[in-house]
Length: 146
Image 1 (cartoon, rainbow, N blue to C red):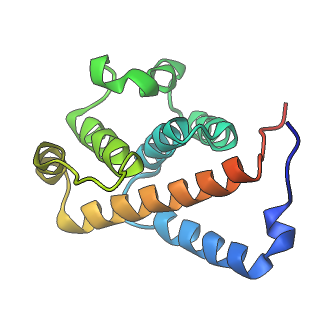
Image 2: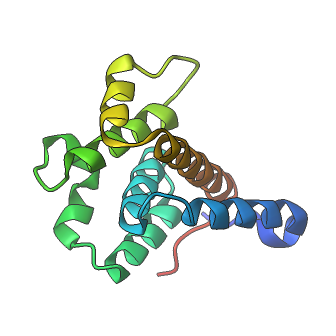
Image 3: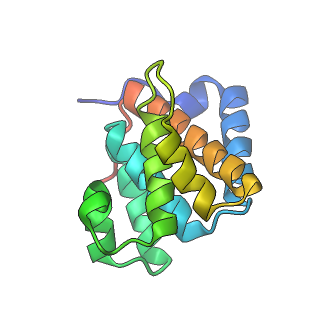
């Protein structure tokens, strides 16, 4: 499949807003390695090959191990992730897969046990941002470079 259009060229003003949101979420209270894990997981769920590839590469540059990256898709059954990371990944899945339903109290309580209120909002904004990027890349068929 070929790319459908270059969304940066098609609407520079809209993309400036996305870049501003991305810059904001990258400079909040959530550390970069955890941000990449949640971006990878949301991108996997949203079937975004471009973002999954990009954030895996970025995570490796920050020192993330291949074993942990390979295990993001099966994080629940992996011992490679901390309770904090698992809470963030569960929250990521709940928000990314939200289809008109509620986020469970169990997932919220896990998040609340590991994160401050400010961190919970910051994490939610980062998940919202990557989901928006995923929707751009998937709908316009942006592919990773081979």
